[in-house]
Length: 251
Length: 157
Picture 1 (tube, chains in turn brown, blue):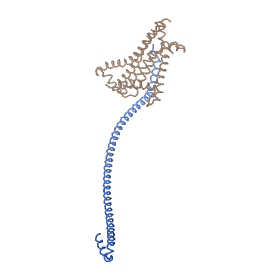
Picture 2 (cartoon, chains in turn blue, green; picture 1 turned 180 degrees about the horizontal axis):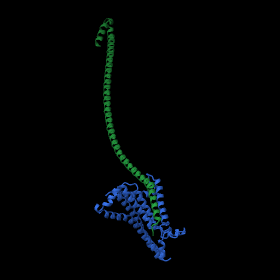
Picture 3 (spheres, chains in turn yellow, cyan; picture 1 turned 135 degrees about the horizontal axis):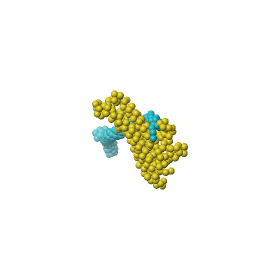
Picture 4 (tube, one colour; picture 1 turned 90 degrees about the horizontal axis):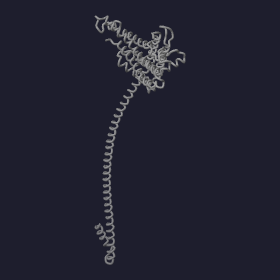
């Protein structure tokens, strides 16, 4: 297989259906599996949670929860029971999906081929459908809470009168639309771009270098990429908290 | 790469996982952590209280010890006082007793001496009388002179 073919092969999804009415089975399967993994273990741990001496797994989950809780407390000043669990889910789920990039680049595709899948993209966050699903969900929550907290009039006044005052209401509106639409766009494209580039480097290393040498830069990029996937998961979580915090605050 | 049903499937997945986390994962863990924090705080407070109690108890113990020591001191002093008092009294009693004994002895002695003297006088008188009688028997009538000698002997007593 030529390097070009190899790279193109890694760009293709396992698609079921045609056009808009199609679904990326690889993305859906991996993301559901990882989300279920996190929620499953987490719920079992939470059910058995003791306020006495915690076990190792409980300790791990408590560290996660405490970490996210602290971030939310620092950045989010409203009162909302949803924000912290939402942030935790985002962080853990995105991190796990990003982590699929750490597996050898051909491992999951080969396995999938063995089960009859024509193509397989192992990293769900490397699919714009997923990153946009996340960011649009966050965007919808922003809109929802903006109306819920500030009311239609309060939110409308904020949109129309800032930043230039009432006389420039149309300009304010346009500014606000651009600003708010940029949020989900930047959220999803940032995550997608980082993961896409990361995986592309793994694919290039595997495609262009001889196998007996490829593992050296591969290992180096793995360590570096480990930082990136954590950072990207963290950034997505933090920005979500900040955006939702802004939706709660009246200026 | 088009937007397709994957997008909606992932929104559903996201909502599902967030709901699960919010309902079943977050609250129990949070509760456990808060409760543990409270337990630890309680434990620390209890420990502090115990330290303070110990300090108080120690102070009280020292106070009781001091009291007991001074009380013992008083008791010992009292005992000493009483002992010397007893001793003194015993001494005095002994001295009195001795004096009485001595006096008694003197009296006894005096009486004995008196008796001896009386006996001796009687004996001397008898001897003298005997001697006189033997001497005088040849010359003087004893019946006439005995009365005279007896009156003399009576004066000697």
